[in-house]
Length: 77
Length: 355
Image (cartoon, rainbow over all chains, first blue to last red; front, side, top):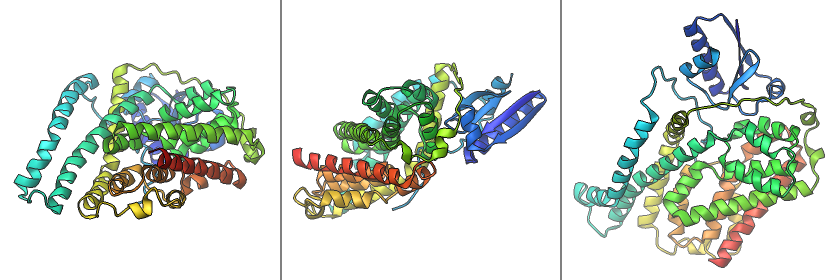
């Protein structure tokens, strides 16, 4: 079970990242949950300063850019 | 003047379904093509203007049209090159890494490093607030944080690329150098003023954990990021460049040589403060403003006045003040704007004096 979190305050890039992450998980056919973290305080507590960011199982794997579906697949493996 | 929110904040690029061709291969093909096209531009623009369009040589219209067909491709090509290089460099500097470098740094040294890192760290004013919180709670001194926040938007890749293309490398270097100086000194002064209590109280109550996002990425990947930056940024600003150059071309061909001398010339002492006053509320992007300003320079406007105007347009904006209001009390915002505006003013006078 993969826990995917998309961190961001709701900018268009965050939504793009959310979609990409969802697609990547679907394509890999792994069981997953995906959650949007929009609370600034929570985002800061995870140590992220540049949004959007992506966390897998509580660990931040990328921040400040939107990787494509293929790249996210690698991060989910 | 058109207002566009932050051109350097990349919009989502279309998701690529397939892998792109190797960035290395694309780069090896692109560089010779770039050089070849660039070197024939002067001839090409004359060919289009005087032969293809059949406009008479030596006329006002001819000089405007030739200027336009030469400048548009030249500026867009140089802009593309600068955005690409900066895009690649920026993949090495994440805000998290920059914070780690700056945390606990002494002032003065910290101010200098913060301003320099501000240039190469990816920054978009929409994430100014999380960045500010992340910096100050991690122990980056307030003044050092400000040096970063001033340099980052002021010396951006679009401004640098356009200045290089339209004014030449000397003025681009002067702009970058004085911009850095303003960021360093203004941040240092803000640090001296001990204004920590004018930061909203809740900011310091956020517990921050340090995350490790050490990414090891192949260089080809970083080149790909440079390409994405070009697509995002140049894709968005080209229209403003085009409009700016069209207006500039009109000025170039039709406005008399000494027209600007009386309003923006050296002899008018009030022109520098006026330029800053007009520039601050203007939230235009560098792409639209620089080509117009370049044309004015040719018509007798003084360089210092022009520099001051560009800096105040690019570095200070009202929307930025609104965003920062979330974390800063009004007095600190006012101090911040006041000090930076004064710095820009001094830069303007300095260059009017020495050039």
